[in-house]
Length: 234
Length: 234
Image (cartoon, rainbow over all chains, first blue to last red):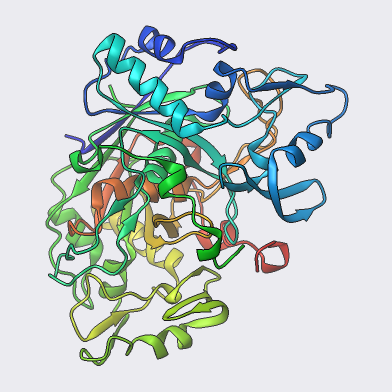
């Protein structure tokens, strides 16, 4: 019996501005959403549903670059075409979270304006209309300094604490733990990506079996974004 | 039916220098290891089995600090008691990967000398003695710049590619993917941590259901550690 299960939701179909993701997920869900599940939804479909699409010149591979500058409040590094910047939300990532994959040619998708709010909206609709009490995480693909390869992280959440605080708890040998704050929503987003892939077109997954004490009010922006004053690399 | 399953292996017991982790895992494994599984093993028990333990003064909370300096080849940042440094392996992390939780009082555990080799050793023994063809990842808990909370990442692997290269593949709409290198071993390590926890004393987990094409020869140090010359934040 698995302690944790991850289930891809297939066939939510191509998402268009104005679509109700909660309805699309319920309609496509052959995995039978259960109370206590955590839904992970990629930023791309959330941005599409929210109409965060901007027309760009399909013949110019750099036509989204002015958008990157506009969506950045601070540029940290610039090398060639790559810009590492801080977004309005406080996220530090490449190209302000704008990329062109899984978007129609001639369009770019911006990040949701408030990705925690996006997660809350989907969670609230699933509860109010369908009686499902599930947590929701919006995931996106970020690079990391010092380590090659990208991983998925959370950019918004609802119904789950972004960081599990283990302060005051003890390790298996009874010593008080020093490393105490685990970014569980980032670990869940990374786990879900293992069944989504970048090329498979799976935009939603269910993570089932998470610790009960992680559920509750949560926010990626409030809990995960590190205060620049407290940051050694900004 | 879950696409991915994660199963904690309980009761491998307290690991001591000289212990054979492959034997301990097989003895404790009530989940029946299957070919194509990926085992995730925390650094702490690997370091213990390999005798990477150093006596420190149990009455001095800073007595491990000289070890941190000795295990670092370069200090990136220093604030108060916290040192962010680069280890011999090329990992950039807090306190050179040395921490005191889940270690006997009066001891500190250093990182394995060669964590890819540690993973290969366990994989090879499981195959040679028990006929199990599984991948092995050694995980550790790292902080991140810009984002609060720690997540587990891979510091060694065997039998699995550290980075899945999607270059040349297309997205769901047929466009060539731009973000193409996914650090799958880091996503797997993060996923496994969801059933391990820092306080539960679960040091090994099975991840079952990974893509067949990810399996093969792999190395965290060769594939994940970014060349400092190529790094924007070093």
